Image (tube, rainbow, N blue to C red; front, side, top):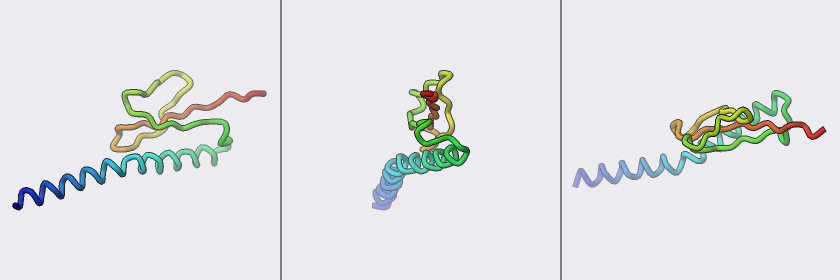
Length: 84
């Protein structure tokens, strides 16, 4: 009986952590976004995308600016060229 209680508690903890991961990524993304805007980049001049580690494209146009969910996701920054 004690083992099943501990197993139940462990499963609840793991499931809560898994559900909280996207929320924490959104929080980290919002924080980074605000810092970029505070540095003078207009909100329409860039994008931030949350991607799994194995899907990160490190081409010259994209930069990893953060990570979240126990380092299983990266936050990728892309700056748009001026259309002038």
